[in-house]
Length: 215
Image (cartoon, rainbow, N blue to C red; front, side, top):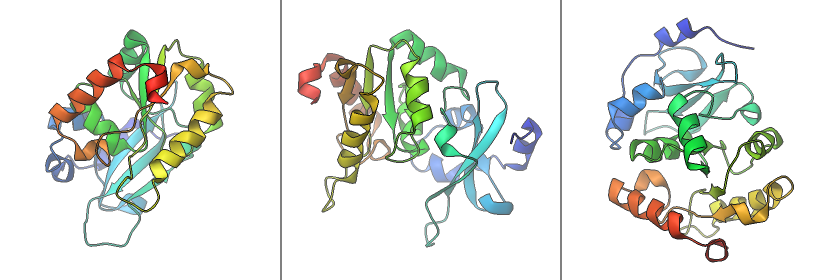
């Protein structure tokens, strides 16, 4: 199923939720997101997901209210089929091809934080389980380094981000040379918790990190 671009006119350009987190209006406009005021995505900052032909094939929505027990993120469409934002934002595709590297993060929020800090070679896995279709598309790119950058849940009893990263590395090894895969969690819980200087230092370290050090 696909959706016409005109449906994005229903999303209001109310970016307060992410502006308060330090994400620029320019970045949010690049992601073509907006606040939904009806339907399944009601009161969620909603992001359109495009497929390889540029047509919208789904949506991902982040709840904007803080005093709610609703899920933080919900999706419309099959997230296992998505390769986001490679087909949605041309800058992302160009940066991945130019730098021959990519940071794979858990959520769009992490992707926004990196993109806004100038790190545009980023892909979103939509959780801790990298799907077979995602891996197949990733393996088809000319990449020297693949950074698994899931959240670093070091303050919790279980570090689910690290557990998910390890499982994903094993899955990736079926189609990608192990030497091209790097384990590189954020230095804080997630990239949204890091300021631009911290992200710049993180990326600088990723640039000089050896494969052995990452493992």
